[in-house]
Length: 251
Length: 320
Image 1 (cartoon, chains in turn brown, orange):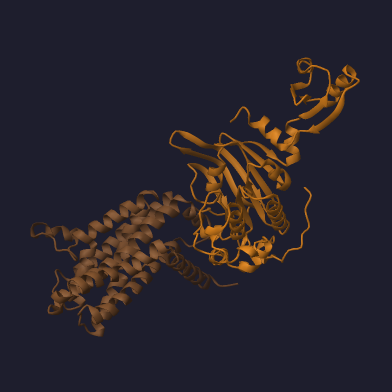
Image 2: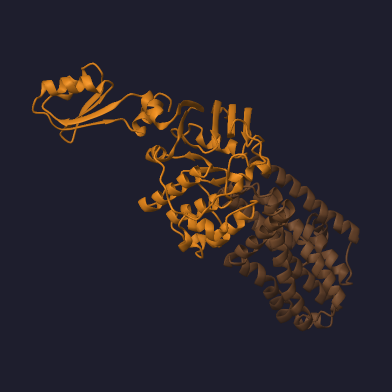
């Protein structure tokens, strides 16, 4: 028989392992979120605008951080938004609540899954960027960006969780997609926003994550690191706590 | 109830035996609802419900649709809270993790991750418990080893129920909740599940069974609680419940008219079906004597006491 803390650790590890395993086995989830960011990056930054960014180190970094942030957003938003909504609807969440699963194991497992996906995405991005994307950064800068983006999955997990606790399984993919695409566009990190409406980017957590990554890369960025961290941590804590309370109340 | 003796791998768990638990229990009661009221908007789901299950007992909760069975189970599992009254699981709130470490659950409508294999599902749920069975031992107990490496999503409906049952018992629960466990199972698989349930009860576990198959309750239950309109309207052993509604069915081939028999004292119903006279009677002996006197040529006589199904229909006809 195991003592309490060993058992708890075993539960958390098992939950995280099987959540990651099932998601990796899901072609509809794994392929878009693992392959899409680096594929689009190679298509746009390398094939279409390769010549333009060859002589523009900051432009190359913008492309790299922009597609990286896009890769960060997907696993968290869809892993929580769509899967939580489906699992609520299909009774899995009720079963887990009835079983002696520690309450946070479910959420932590999905967060770790999202972070694992982001780590895989960032490994491919950081391989492509210096080799093909004309990004010349130090190893330290790359490691900083990796850490920022992996932790940066958390606010998007919180946004997904918020959606997943409030929408049906049928509506969740549409709502999540809408917010995902809107956030990519409105953050202005892939397609610059018209000057008059650039302030809209301030409403998007993806903008703050992109600024943090740019700052770690030594490229010009807006705002301060502290402000970005406060916004991202605030979004994570606020939306997670609202969603967790709702899950505890209504499942 | 006749207990079936079966040769299965040992599942004896020190925690499933009396006196070995650290969990507080009141008079051997593992789970209890007392004076529970629960409403959904203007709909009354439970109306002063009292129910308990004790160690080593299989309680079947029966009732027509909308009687409050699902709400009852949800309250015992801690998925909902009563508006008034109390719900206790192992002497604590059902929402306490410590209480739920003693239970196993098989729900009726649940979709497990289709991508995970059966063995992986069992391994995951076993990780929630202090002293679980290994996935292999759990599958041997439920005769599901052949499903071990198959993705859950590729299983048939009946196989999914078998996998869910294995998941429910893998933590060596002291109290097992089974919600319509044998829906979609073939006869052989159902018998296997029943024998495992009997084995668990013999080993000291308690079971709360909700089922629409009354023969299942008849075959397994030590005690039956019949729910209607959010209250327990009858509770007792299957024999006691049957005795509470004294009905005997008589069937025969006779020239006596059904309309005539329907007028006899003690006859509650009479009709013709497939050229046979069917009688439901309260005092069967008197009716039989009169019937045989009225028609000396009467043939193909069958007499049997009402089954749980008929008793259930009788009990709930005014309540549904």
